[in-house]
Length: 304
Ligand SMILES: Nc1ncnc2c1ncn2[C@@H]1O[C@H](COP(=O)(O)OP(=O)(O)OP(=O)(O)O)[C@@H](O)[C@H]1O
Ligand SMILES: [Mg+2]
Image (cartoon, rainbow, N blue to C red; front, top):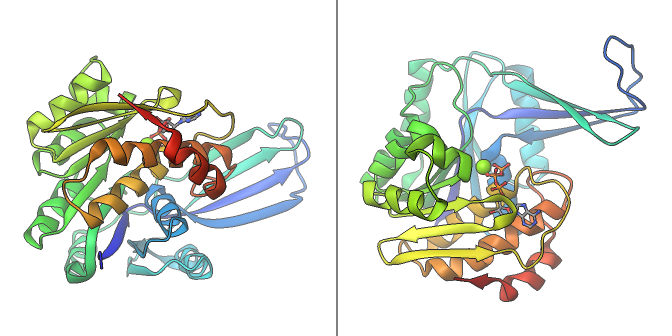
């Protein structure tokens, strides 16, 4: 049996959604409905992987009352979590949904500072023996070294665990150099390797050392590169909906495959990843996917 999919979210959040009749800057509003959910890109990855039937382990830091709410919501969602306590208070993100047009206005707190001791405690309690893959995604909280993901990937490798790292810019090239599978969207890729075609940029990351690179390209689908070749897969149809979290659905599929086999058939992986990402666009909340749509599209995706 493949091991757990460990999903790392170094900057966990409580995502709070307020629904109001009409949002007016400077006005006073009655909040008709409040929703609270654990958030952060790694949590989206964990939710999608769990929906696809895989065993996940959510890894991150929690602090204060907000941290307790995050831990409770993960439990209620059926997601197993190993959370390292910190002195600071877990951040919140607030989305205010305007009843008139359904648009969301979003406020993202930066997150608490994580101390060097707290970071060490996190690294020391990683259950490497039980993990099939380590998936890292999302922003870093203040206090952590900028090469935190690369450090995690190197430690994972020492325990024969492959990492999938979803990031951009210099952190992406640093992750590639560790031999991890790297994930980014087209603009994150260009922030790392310059203004190139997605296919060319993905191949550059493999040349730097990445086991593979899977780059999402919005409605134009996605590209995978490994030493064996470069592939692009197109969505079966362009759907309208909420694209936030579509890339996280791709990361979930990539992590699940890598947990089973470190050198998969990347063209086959792309079929599942493209179907899952489009199925994520269909649902209004990041971290959810439309499972029926995923199953319908998966066999129909074309790969070049
Ligand atoms: N309108 C759409 N219809 C069908 N598939 C889509 C659409 N938009 C995006 N996708 C799929 O979702 C994938 C991920 O999209 P995108 O490149 O925008 O990810 P992202 O910016 O990393 O997203 P996030 O980080 O918010 O999860 C794309 O590669 C594509 O396959
Ligand atoms: Mg992304």
